[in-house]
Length: 611
Image (cartoon, rainbow, N blue to C red; front, top):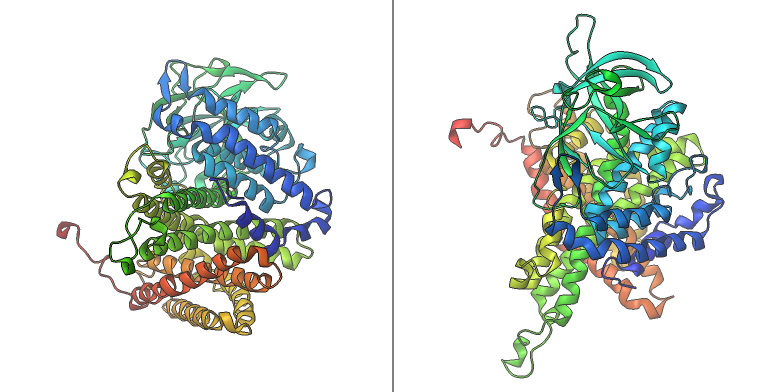
């Protein structure tokens, strides 16, 4: 059941015993599916990840993408893996049947993608971005744009990117300067010519797919001929690498140029580019300079539309972070069981050496990893289950509640696995000792790959301000109350189970502390500096959420133990990880909240010169 990529027994527990995903099949949208079809998809993902993604994990790290006059090139194994991925239907898996998709529940598709993320996160990044691009176009694009640009991505023929950041703006998207000038219209909609530069574009160029569909944020000139300041001036455009001919196939090359490659610490198999739009020197589509793009949605609605893809990407980043940590845990666990070193203290130096897993401190580290990575995967699957509920819930009220709760949890789904999955990778290196610090073992590469995840798709600090500023204080705690109801329900059930009563009381107290902190901040109104300590609040909130998810899983485990004696060790592992989290991690919440409640300005007031 443990493949070295993911523990299949854990995934089975999360999907079927905890989230009860089979109950989705009673809904019309998923009526063609069953537990058997779900398992077939997951089994296929496991085989394909092991056969096509894992073997070139180290190769694509060692041989970085290259750039020459024809474009960017990656190792051929990436292309072969993604063609197999497309042929198996995984690009289309989560899309509706009317778009030639398999109409899988998002939670099942996420479980399948977990295998590819664990096996080779850099190769898996291409379909992750492509699916997000296609879903955005399927939601907001015109019928012609869907046929031209979304369907080929769903088929895995075209790949997608998101072009947001610029060299001078970074995450401050109100400060972008890429310009879009009207250029008439055609069958694909309002046409524009784009000029500007985009930085940190994952998959920005490669030699794998037939075409690349760039979703580009740019500003349209106002009546005065100047760019509209702020985010209200930002619009969204679809800019293909190759313009399409009359048959819908790639034709003339668009005015998009790779100005350079970024040479990364990890995640090297995913190309990362500086793109110039509208240079007009090497390519002049339709005989004129400027990258040809088609507006998606209305002028000025670029950011609200783009958040559709960004939020999906944030949850996908969380999945990748969870699975990099998860694979590091499985490698460390296998190593700890095999590596002989030292003897029990009671042996007083006599007798044979024992596996290092017999030492208490190694067990502590493994328990920390287990609590982090299995908890992170549970969080991501819970978020994916909310996506299904938001789309197919039985009532409008149920769909709205799921959407509100998903919005609240998205910053946690992105940031918590990114921070604590990385911590699990750090521990994996520690357990391997000196060997873990060498390139001969995968754990060092897993750490390097995961170090990106607290940075891209919104840094941890950005997620913290989003959570506290927009999702809680601006929302006046409405979504927070929904989450509180679910936590209270879990606490109530756990209080009735003597073996978990202490954890239930601890969670109730921690959540009460979070609620009190939110009320205190809410009473402060618009005082300056309210978000200065948002990151400690994010840490506290995330740990509170994870404690709840662990307690909820533990309730399932204690019910199962008397029934399934053959699986007792697995369920004991779940209970042990839960108890570890409550004993070692939950107490950190008080310290984080203390900083937030104090409203300290120690960091904010530090003058530049004093550093």
